[in-house]
Image (cartoon, rainbow, N blue to C red):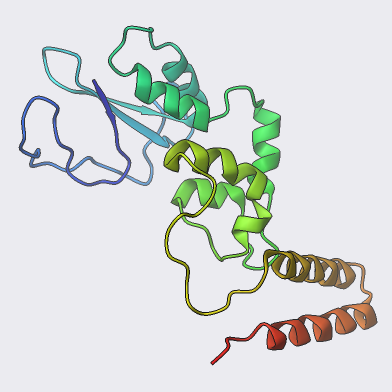
Amino acid sequence: MGIIDGSGLPTQTADTDRQSTTPIEKQPGMKCQHCEKPATFHITELTEPSGPIMVHLCEEHARVYLSQETVDSPTNALAGMLAKQLKLEQTAEQLAKLDKKTCPVCGITFAEFRQSGRLGCGYDYVCFQSDLEPLLLNIHGSKTHKGKRPTRRTGAPDRQHELIQLRREMQEAISKEQYEKAGELRDKIQEFERDDGPNE
């Protein structure tokens, strides 16, 4: 059975109920075992009788490694889940384009999200929606929230989308040195944010 862990926390072995005493070494400079790219997948294989085997792979080699799992392999379910998350049908060019996608509000890129596992702001869900939906569906089994909601009004999704669009247009106007238009857009954004302030 394989255990995938990148947290640096102690791992629990499959055949005992106690945790190992040594945490997984997660060094910032750890390289893929097949190339010189940074290792982003750290896989522990517990199938060998001699003990666990650690495999450190970049995303590209992790795809190959996980797609080679046999159907009767004990890690098949886990590998299948990760393979879906990696979107095997995407080319390296498509992944590079996706990684450059940036939130206009907080500035986080999709690559930074994939590295840290954390989004930068609430608007990232709108900005990266089409890319996050398959991931959320795979992890949680649903794309919709089924729990409690905050009591404070958070604004309609359409208004949030409009605010993101205004910010994007303002950035575009600034880059084209259309400062008058950028100032008008800034004023609209400020008015928008005042209207969406918390109801107390």
